Structure formats: structure tokens, C-alpha cells
Image (cartoon, rainbow, N blue to C red):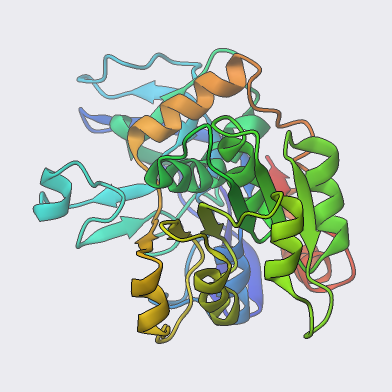
Length: 341
């Protein structure tokens, strides 16, 4: 079967591998129809993805079709269209026993820590598949990146009266803002990229956007102007930028909640007296839970979340090795690219 493998940084190759065998009792054989390309794939291509080894088959944002069921599988049927939950826990460690399957001690992410979905077919435990009779394969490939923002919003426990700031208008930030807007009418998105902010303003039910313009930009003044003299009571930072993350403590209202979604590979330092003076709550958010996937599918099916604007580029599977670098490292403005089989 056709398979795309990342042999070394910068070298994607289309190869042929053996088709999978029949599924074990709790497994399902699936056919891949749509693969979303995410920041993790791009970092791996550049050789800057931590805890990563080569060669690796990428791909964890997937829309798949069920081809064959193991004898114990009762929750799926042949022909089901599904989204994949790519966070696998091989052991029942302390976090997993407490229901935190998104951050188990020995978690293995499909397409990152183990070979993923850039191939025609693969075998998977049925419990990691979430079916929908209404969504397209492209939409199902969007569920995982949407789930990152959904989970972060769940962590923040946003209330109707909260003034919410999402920092970063990449795919994760866009999804975060979409779900935050389900809880509060006072949601703003901040970024340095006017084009990305325009996408947010045109497609999301948010209050407004804030563009960071130059090193002397006064973010606090801009936010007070936007929120009628107040500062955000919830900040969700999807940048992974240490300067942005540090700035959240200054921009936050007293008593605010800050959630870091983006990951910075280094030490994060802040001024402790400011942190204590404001009695801030600082959280991390990692991956998502099974229930997050089910909830997002339901929200899209009911028309409460719009995915029409998400996919800006589509690529045929065979063309990905030659098109990957010019698409993601050229002048294209990519919101989300989806590979189709």
C-alpha cells in the first residue's frame, strides 16, 4: 500500500509497505481518506520536534472509514466514517486511572511517538474511533486540532460574564476562540498577523481582534479600550512563545485564569510578586479527552461550530512529498491543509 515516511528532517518519501493483517478482537481495520497537517508535522520536517525519532510515518489528524471489525467490537460497523483520537496509553498509570487519558505518564501519540496515518490503511483499537453519520472525512480530520482548543476552554471553565483573550490566531487559537465564544460574548483574539486576524473576524462570533503592532505596542491599553476599561479575566495563550506567555501575567485582570496551550521548549520564568498580587490561576492544557471528541462532533453536526472556512489547501497524497516544503515554508497563507487519499 502507499505510505509516506519522513526518513530524516526535510525528506518525505512515498514508498510501498505491506497491507495490515486482519484485526485482533478489539481492533478495527480502517482506510484513510483525509489527513490534516499540523504544527507537529512541520516541526518534525524541520528537525525541531522534541521526543521524536526518524524514520517516522506522520499523520494524527485523520478522517477514516471502517473496513473490518474485530470480533469483540460492538460500537462500530463497516462503512462508518470516524475521527481518530490519537492519544494512546499503554499502561493504567496514576493519571489515566484518574481519567486524565490526555496526559498519561507513558502516553504515545499516533504519528509522533509511533507511526501514524500517512498510509492507505492501518489497524487501531476501536475505542479510539469516534463515528459520525453526518460529517465528511475532511471535517473528521479537523476534530483533533479542534479538540486541543476545546479542552483548553474546558480547563478555563469560562463563564458568561468573563472577558476572554485568545493569543495566537493559528489553527489551535482559532479553534480555541470558536469554543470560547460558545460561553462568552466577550472574546477577543490577539496576534501579529493581520491576515489571520481577518479570518477570525470574518468567521468567528467574537467581539473583536487585537493586532500587535511593533515592539512599543501597548497591549494593556488596547485591551482596556476593547473591554471598556477592564482586562481579560481568562487568557488562553496558543503561541508557545515565551515572551507572549510572560506578558499574559501583565495583561490579566486580578483574579484571572491563564491557560497555556502552546508549548515552549525551555524554562518559563515570571515575576512572582505580580503573580501573587493578582492571585492568578495558571494552567497547562495538553491534548484532549475522549469526551471532547464526542462533544465536538455533536456541536458540528448541530451547526453550532462552523468548519467551512477551515480548510484553505488540499493536496493529493502522492503529491505531498514534493509539495510539503513549498506549501509550508513558502509564501502561502495556510490555515489548514488536508491531504486526500
